[in-house]
Image 1 (cartoon, rainbow, N blue to C red):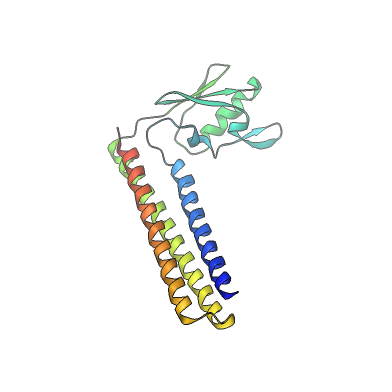
Image 2 (cartoon, helix red, strand yellow):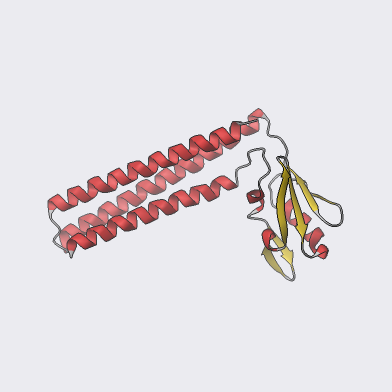
Amino acid sequence: MSEGDLNSVKKNAESKMKKAIDHLLEDYKTIKTGRANVTLLDNVMVDSYGQKMPLNQLGALSTPDAHTIVIAPWDKSSIQAIQKAIETANLGLNPSNDGSMIRVPIPQLNEERRKEMVKLAKKKTEDAKIAIRNIRRDINEQVKKLEKDAGVSEDQVKKANDEIQKMTDKFIKDLEALLVKKEKEILEV
C-alpha cells in the first residue's frame, strides 16, 4: 500500500508540473511578437447582449497577413462594442472598422520593445520555474509524511526524492527550451 501511495504522490507531482508548463504557454500567448496572432485577443471581453462575452464567441477571427487580425462579427450591430473592447483592453492596438468587419493592425516592434518582451518572457518563465520548485518542495514534504505515517522505508523515500528531483530537472529544462523558442520568436524581424 505504501508503494502505491508513493506512486500516487509522484503522479500528482508530474500532473502539477505539467499544469505549470501549460500555464506558462498560455502566458506566452499574451506576449506580442510583432506578428499577427488571434490569441492576442483571447482575453478581450465584449459587452454584448447585456453581458460580457469573449470576443471569439462574437465573430470569426483570422490573420490574412502577418500584420493584421480581421474580425468578422456574426452580428453586425456588435461592431462598435467589439472595437471599443479591443481599444480598452490595454493591448496597444488600434482597431478600425468598415461597417462589416474590424481590422486590427499589429504594429512592428522596435528593438527596445522586443527586448522588453524578452524580459517579460524571462520573468514569466522564472515564475514557472519557481512554481515547479514549490511543487517539488510540497511533494517532498508529502513523501516525508508518508515515511512517518504509512511506514514507508528510508530507501523508498530516498528513491522517491531522487525521482522527484529528476522530474523537476526535466521540467525546468523544458521551460528553458520554451523560453529559447519564445525569445527567437520575439526577436525575429
